[in-house]
Length: 105
Image (cartoon, rainbow, N blue to C red):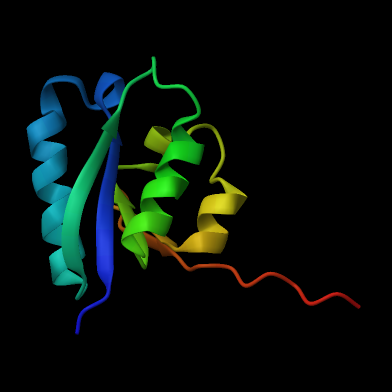
């Protein structure tokens, strides 16, 4: 069975290209061998978007989040998201592999 993936985008960043971004997210996820389940769409008004996205990742047991670009996630790639799943961008097409927490010394 293919691992599940969800899409994520910010409506205010995609603007009029939102439908195109959603199509590209779905297409890339499927091409990379994921079972695409849904796209999560937030705006600049959403409170704690990364926290809410993490909730969806946990609920859906997503192995990956696919987003049009890292701009949709904020100024930095969130460590908490990368600890939960792979983060894949459409442009440029890059897979940021899930990080495994370091073992205590």
